[in-house]
Length: 171
Image 1: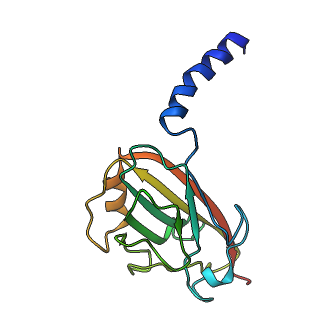
Image 2: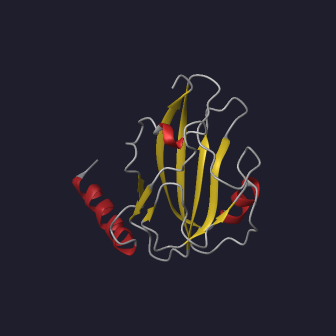
């Protein structure tokens, strides 16, 4: 790649970064590092408490934040452990076991509108927390299904941030 082409790329990206505040949308947790094991307190059999979450770099124009925690390694396919919409755009932290006021819970794969933590049948599974910055509030009733969530956010995602952890059945 030539120097001129690299400079052209940088010049084109700078306005985009400035428009979004210069920071990337990120999610982290003080309870575990990316790729590391989730604490036992987050598991379905060890306290069933959602992990604390920290958000940063919220894109300009965000009207609402949505959250999904799923297990892509589940034997029956993607397994939803936690799903919520209408988190306020000013949210920077979500304490363990809580959601911000006004958040609306959807139905997880166990059929309950709540957080249900890891409980892999065998081996080690990955658990991915997805945060979506949306340009509008989805209009879904409490207990909504994942399929309805996917339709509601389509075309409205300004940015997505993910955090992956693991949990083993042997714990």
